Length: 340
Image (cartoon, rainbow, N blue to C red; front, side, top):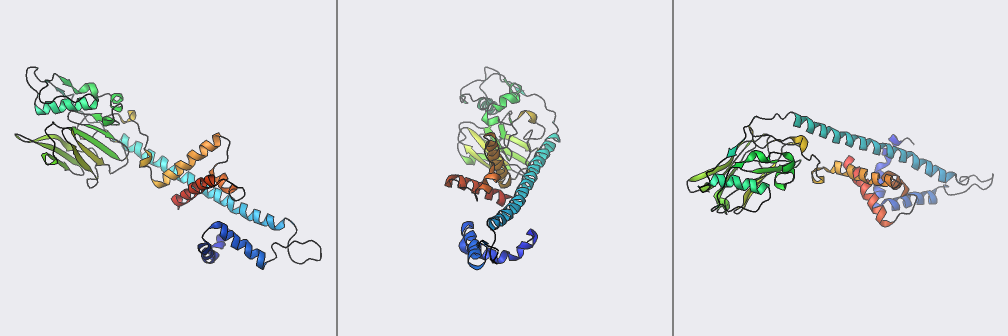
C-alpha cells in the first residue's frame, strides 16, 4: 500500500484508537484481528498446506513495514530540526541587523558640581543616589550629607555595568539606571526618602515617550523625560514605587532586539559588549522543544548512548524502564506538537 493513499482509512482507524485509548491496545486489536480472521499466524509446514506463511515470513512483513515508516519518520524529524534551526538563525540575523541600524547619538559628558559648604539640592541628591545604587553602596543620607563633584563619566565602562544587576546589559545614567533582557527593559529612578506613596509620583508612559515626576514643595519635579529610542507596548508596561528608594519601571519591548539607549540623544552603550544570550523564558514553545531535544541528543552522543529518535524506535522492540519511557515519550510528543 502506498503511504500517501493510506489516509482513506483514517476515520475507521481513529475510531478504534479513540475507543481503546492507547497505542498498545490498538496494536492488540489489529494483530488480534489478523489472528482471528486471517491465516497470518498459520504456518505452512508441508506442500499440501494452502493457508498460512512459511516460518518467519509474517514477522518479516511486519518488520519491513515498520522500517519503511520508521525511515519516513526519521526524515520528517531531520526536516523539522533543520527548519527550526533555520528559524533560530534567521531570528539571530534579524537581531544583529536591527542592532547594526542603531546609530549612536552625540552627547556631552555631564559633570555635576556642588559647593562643599552648601547642602545638596533634591536634584543633586537624586543623582548621587543613582551612582550609589549602581555601585551597590550603602544608602546615602539625603537630608544631612554634603556632596562633592559627581562624575558620571567614570561609570560608562560597560564591563562595570555588567557587574550590577540594575545596569546589566544597560547603563547608569544621571538620574536613573537601566537593564534589559531580550523582551523587557527595567528602569530604576531613585527618589528621596520622603517619597513613600504612589500619589506622590506621576509616570506618563506612552508607546514612544516617558515622563516621570515627583511632588515637591515647589510643585512637580521632573526626574526623567524624553522619547524612547524604540517603541514599547504601553498596555503591558508597568511601574511601581519602592517607598523612599526608587520608582521601578518595567517596559515591554515591541520587537525582539537589544536597545543601546533608553532615551533619544543620550549616550549609547556598546551592545557588542553585553550578554546577548537569551533566557529560556524568552524562547517560544517550538524553539524550546528543539533545544531540549538537541541538548538531550548531545549528552547521549557524548556518552555513546542512543539519541532520542533511536531510543524512541527501540521502545517498540525493547523493554525500557518506566522513567526512561516517560522522558522519551514527553520529548517525542513535545517535538511533534511544536512542529504541527
